[in-house]
Image (cartoon, rainbow, N blue to C red; front, side, top):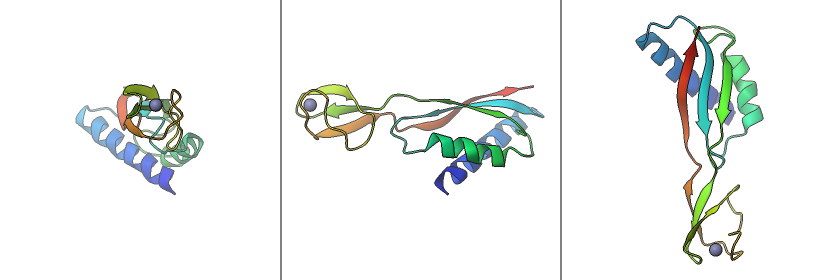
Length: 113
Ligand SMILES: [Zn+2]
């Protein structure tokens, strides 16, 4: 499952960061997952529960921010919102769009006890 490996990747960052900062327990992890990152949020939350059953982030909350997807329309020469890959340009209805934002996935910070 794709989302499980992502949850495990987040936990790796959390464990490393906690070690570096002498944090013994993390109660909340904030992450940014762009709308175009292709990650199913309910599946990720589900996977998160299973990777936080023990360890430094036992029982920790996963708080997810969703940076909006944006794309450059080559026909309109403007930046337009893009909720999903394959959506048309909201101005011209065309498909000459290059995604320019909303694909990121990163850990923002950890909240320790
Ligand atoms: Zn357009």
